[in-house]
Amino acid sequence: MMGASDVLHTVDLLAGAGVRVWLDGGWGVDALLGEQTREHDDLDIVVPIPDADAARRALEAAGFAIVEDEATAQFVARAADDRRVDVHTVAFDDEGAGWQRLADGGRWRYPPKGFAGEGWVVGRRVACLTAEVQILCHTGYDPDDGDRRDVALLAARFGLVPPAPYGP
Image (cartoon, rainbow, N blue to C red):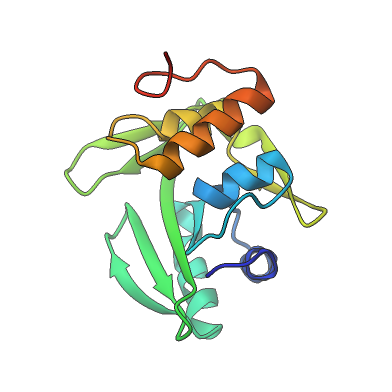
């Protein structure tokens, strides 16, 4: 499991290596909400492609092994105690949008405004994707109960209308 202290340690580790980091996924949702609402088996983060090698080196130096590697799309680092960091890499365009290559050859666009999010992990401010973009990232696939819960919490807290298949 990735606890709050693990999240902050990872953010600090990567910042110390010069890596820009935005929380995504479950911890990104909880950071936006300002509280941990559930247990997390990993930490999803977004980093710029030019910072990816520094992120790899920092995580490996901290005892993580790269267990999945999709080159310019993402990689997963895993510690011996099964803590995992899922690193999504993006290339920024001139408008500030982050483009992630997908395993199927397609691309996913993180809107520029999505990188302006701020959240809190045990009282400490962290950069994360905005609520709107977190919800956008929960589309395009069949959601599970955890996805539905995360989207409902974000929609309620930020006054957003959940998209299909989450909405009425």
